[in-house]
Amino acid sequence: MKLSKEEAESILSSLNFRHEMGTIIAVLQDSETKEVLMVGNMNKEAVMNTLTTGLVHFWSLSRKSLWLKGETSGNLQLLQDFKIDCDGDAILVLVKSQGPVCHTGNRTCFYRDSSSLNLTSSLS
Image (cartoon, rainbow, N blue to C red):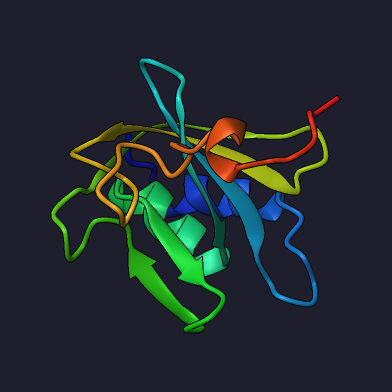
């Protein structure tokens, strides 16, 4: 999925970026299985690049820089669809993944469940 600059700008105008950071929460989800792959942050440039190139970009809060997901690993994330939540302050990015998403080599960043956390009390 690739949009024109004008279409992308229209979407950008409907988003509510967090003022203090200039970012929005982005949930990356497999477009076929609906599995959540990761959660990251996007600024306006990352959203624009994602929508106009069809490749998912994020904004690194720690490095304060734009990055293309999969640029170094080759595990690019191909944009299939894009959804905005009811408040416009979070987005769902549906992708076709070209390989593992997590930097650990796992398909998803959510590969640990509560049993792997060695909790001493039960969750209610």
